Image 1 (tube, each protein chain N blue to C red):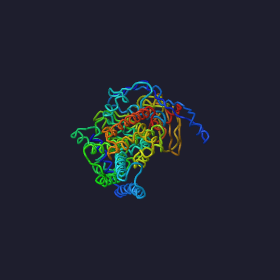
Image 2 (cartoon, each protein chain N blue to C red):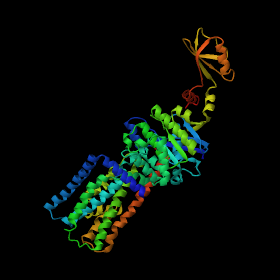
Image 3 (spheres, helix red, strand yellow):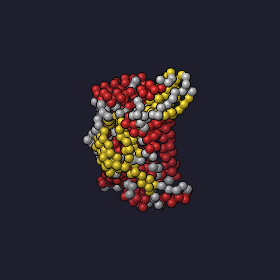
Image 4 (cartoon, rainbow over the protein chains, first blue to last red):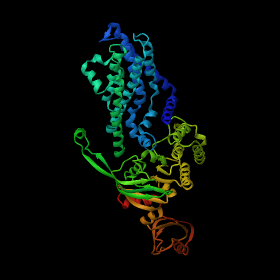
Length: 258
Length: 324
C-alpha cells in the first residue's frame, strides 16, 4: 500500500509546484461551496422547515453530504480523465507494472485541491453539531462516522462507474453527473422531501438515501430503531457492481487495444 | 527466452461513409470491418539477443510488442516469455521486463528525476542496496548525475530519453522492450543511447527487442532483424543476409585523373560526374580487388570507396518487394 501512498504524495508535490494555482483552486472550491451554505441560510429566513426537517437538521445533512462528497471526489474525481488516460497510453504504462491497475491510475490523481470543500464541510459540522439537539451518545457518533465513511465510498463508486463508460465511448458521459455533482446539490436536503418515487429510486437503484436519508432520521431522533444506524453499510454493496463493470472495461480494453 | 507460436489478433474497426446522414445511420447500423493485425506470427528469441523489429506503419509492430508485454490479449496462438504467458500472469511477469515507449513517459513531469526513480524502486520492490548499485551505475554510464535533481519538464528530449531508459532498467529486467528509443534525439545523444544499449546487453545479458524506423539504430545495434508486414513475419535473419537477399551488388565510387576508364562486361555504370564514376558490380562474378586492379591499369586513382547498399535503401527495396 505504501507505494500508492507515495504516488499520492508525489502528486501533491506536483500540484504544489504551481503554488498560486493550487491556492487559488482551494479558495475557489471553498467559495463555491459557501454559496450552498448561504443558500440554505437564506431559505430558512423565510420558512421554518423543509418537510419535516428544521434548519439544523438540514445543515447537518448538508455538512455530512458535502464532506462525504469531497472525500469521494478527491479520490475518484480524477477518474473523469480516464478517457485521456486510455488515449495517451498511460494505461498501457500501468499494465506493464507489477501493481494493481486501478489503484495505479487512481493514486496519482487524488485531487488535493478538494481540501477547499473538505474544510468547508468540516466547518459546517463544527458549527452545527453543538447547536443541534442531538445527544451525542456513542450510537449517534457511529452513525455519523458511517454516514461519512460509506458516503465517501458511494460517491467514489459513482465516479468509478462514470469513468468506466469511457472504455466504451472514449468520451465522458455527462448524464452521469446527475448522480455525482448533482447528488451533492440535491443531497443538501434529506431525500425524503423529494417524494416517494425519488426516494425509492435513491434507495434501491443508486443507494444515496442509504447514506443520507435513513441514518439522518435516526441521527435526529425521528426514528429510533437501531438498524437505521447501519443502513450506510448496505450502500457498500454498490461498489461491487461498479468495480466489476470497471474490470469488465479493463478486460475489453485489453482485447481491443487503443 | 521468448517463444511465440501462431499468434493471431484481429481488430474490429467500424467503417462509415462521410457526411452527417451516414453518421446518423452509423448510430444504429454497425458496419464492422475486421483487420488482421497479426496473422499467424511465430518466432523465437533467445536470452541475450538484440533483435530489431522493423516494418512500415500499421504492419503490426506495436500489436506484437503490446502482446509480448501483456497489454493485449491475442485471439489465438500461444506465447511464452520467461516461462510466463504475458497476458495471463501479468503482475508476476512484468517484474522481469522493462519497457520504454518512446512517446509515453514513465517519469513524473513536475518532480525531480530522482523522485520518479525512488517511486520505481517501490513499484518493483527493489532491494535498497541493489537499487543504489544500479542507480549509481546507470547514472554514471548515461551521465545523469547532474540532472538527478531537475524536474522532468526542464530536461531536453535527449536527457529525458536517457532517464527513461535508466528508469526501465532499475529493476534489472531480463528483457528490455524499446519502442523508437532514438526518436528526435541529436547525434550525440543517439550515439550515447546506442552505446549504452549495447553495453547493457553485453554486461547483463539483457535481451533487447527494438522497434524503430531509424535504420542506423538497427545497423549499429542488432545482429538479427525481423521484418513484419501486413501482420506477417516476412523475413527473419541477420542484416547481411537481408542485404544479400535484396541485392547482391556492391558499389565503387572512383575519383580519377585523366581519361575516363573503360568498363568491362561485369561492371555497370550507375552515375558519372567529371572525374568521378560510380560503378556497381556483383562480387560473385568479379571481386572488388579485381575491379580496382582493372581500373588502376587504365587511370590514376585519386580516391575510392567500396560499399554495400545502405540500410535505408535496403528497407525501401524490401517494402517495395513485398508490397507493404
